[in-house]
Length: 169
Image (cartoon, rainbow, N blue to C red):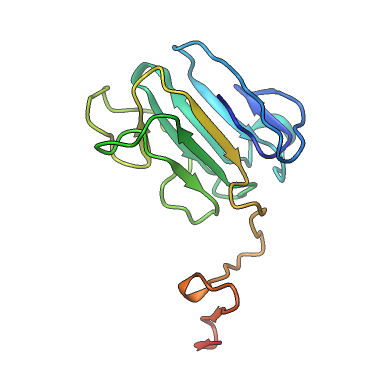
């Protein structure tokens, strides 16, 4: 199952149209499917995939990963396997900013041989046959593109840290 919370989106490079906020779309793919799922919202190149944050899949090894464009972060994405996480397998992976560490900055050209052990992040694996939910904009906000990052001490949104002035208020 593919759950998308943002429109428009593309599946394997082909536009799937627009989806209303909060709507869900379900897509079924063959077990041997490999490709990308992404939204071109906030992307500079339209539906080409350039400037987008993508969820990638390699069916032969049951690998999944996120690729973010280093020059443009258009929207956050979460990949949520339906199976429970165990021994590092089937982990939920989320990238909500251009600073997320659990993603690639370009499409990987090589992958390790399939194994029963979890690969090293930013590569993830789940046994074949699992279903996944994809959530665009999982934190319900578009990323800031002005280069600033809000830091809220202890997660309290009423507090903000000003690192430039060395003052916490």
